[in-house]
Image (cartoon, rainbow, N blue to C red; front, side, top):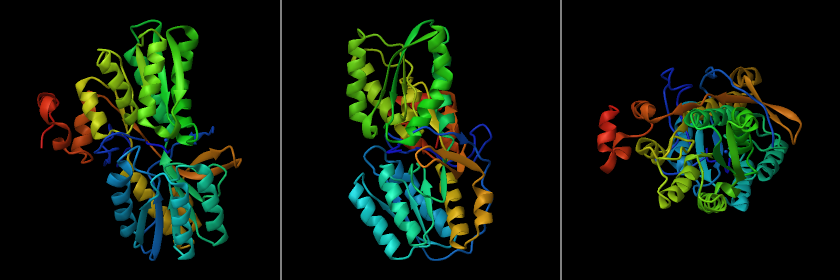
Length: 380
């Protein structure tokens, strides 16, 4: 996504999955496409060897990429027998291309990429294909590209969870006004988040049960821009808003800052995504209504298993792992995919994120939240 999408190790929290949540840090996570969620990926078996190149998108929008994806991918790829070189392009298209060119010229066994710009990703994939190197799109697709496989989450489901949470929060407030602060318009994941939200909210807007004040995508998932954009919408609407669907925890934090300035934090429900430490603290304070937890560790492990299968030329094993599909409207093709299951996190669910080991109690239970953590049974 320049997605900022943060997240983790199990298929659903309620199912008690092994977890990896989206961020022990602060903010953030993300065409038209259709997802069909896959079941947990079967093991492809280890025994791979050689070097795998990984290029992550940036760190400005979210600490997720360095704090979670990088170490989890390194561990998962090492478990499959690979020497993993994980780099971060820091939002620089030229650096992304240079890193990819280096990996391709060195003859890596597989290339795993999460591009900020899908066009850059597609260009890299064309070069890799010409060199006979398999490519896996990680977390976000390169629309119009040629990646062999895609590993991410059921991103429409993420949006559905956000939309349903907003509907639940405002169910007793007929005609409540809702603002939607969406992710980058160039990020297919952000498009899918919005699509999922609309599947829940559009009927409510149409019926008049809720009222859409404005829906606005935010270029580059820029949190600062998200905050100023929301403030403008808020001001133009006479300082009235009843709910804010924010696409991830970073944008949610920016919205909450504006609400605090106007004495409305905790009174206006705000959604999020990634289960970051900041997001979880905001949820416990009541400033943020919910976040979405996504199993990044499962994402990394499925990616490593796919890479192992592809490095051995075992397409059947890869296809057995990637049982879902993502439609690429730009390339007019379906990409074989692993699409993991996201889960809603309300205040009562924060303990689960901690006990699963994704966020430490010490990261979220200090100061004003000590008593709240105690009441939720969070300790350690």
